[in-house]
Image: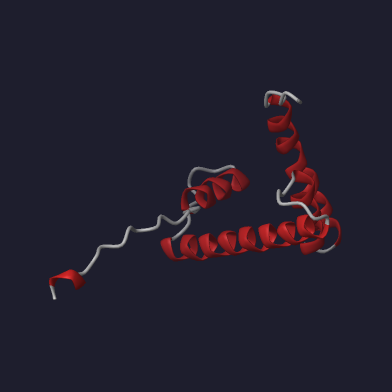
Length: 113
């Protein structure tokens, strides 16, 4: 049965946040001598990936409650505020909203029909 030959599957690339983790740690400590081990980088990568999945899931639920198919920046900031307790969530949503507003204002306006 030559028809049942093995077919190579395309490898799905995964997002890797390793370089960002080391960069943020160096920024936080204001020193070029501070580093991070490969095991710590791997666990930090898993934490970041998990948080991204949780935030997008919560934002998707918020968009679904309004019967919308598109997640808006407001959904993401609300999801962050719901996921993180108290002042931490508020600070994170304020930090997120500044770059998002900058990107949205730089984007060309859509023409309405």
